[in-house]
Image 1 (cartoon, helix red, strand yellow):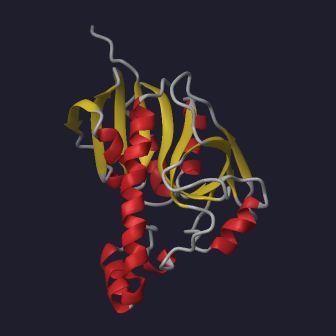
Image 2 (cartoon, helix red, strand yellow; image 1 turned 90 degrees about the horizontal axis):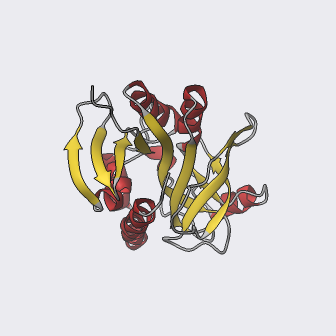
Length: 239
């Protein structure tokens, strides 16, 4: 019987966060799994599973568990975009978490592995997994005062699954909005009951606030550029 090479499973919130990694694939197969987006790919001579199932730790955990159930896996990685908390971080910089934290009042900490080889991230340090979008520079400064270097929304869900499955866990993110930047909209107002972002409502909110369109356009460009840099970084890592 032929053995199946254990896969590296990368879990993001949105497919666009994985686009930069997909660009490095030498073969890609769509998977009919119960997640919004699932691909199997060969990247850098390694077997990858690329999954996106929506925003937030709960949906990320569902995607990660789907990968575990269909294993075998050699790694579970929380990937995608993040907000910078360290003022030295710039758009497109790569952050490798050394620890994932849930914020107060439910403070929980998850240990994070480091890749066995590959490029060096711009910053390594604790990453906060927030249940909501951290929109303002003031909120970012408050989180940075706890020692965290970046904030995102999915990593704790992937970490929890990895712990129970006994699979090495990694968290590697790209900065889409630096610490000094306040987002042009409060995106928390445009989410459904599961936490997913409602693109139609976001578009309408932008049209009703045309003075914010340039900032939204810059954020979109920054997100695309960061996805490219994140994909290049991940494609050259060894897990």
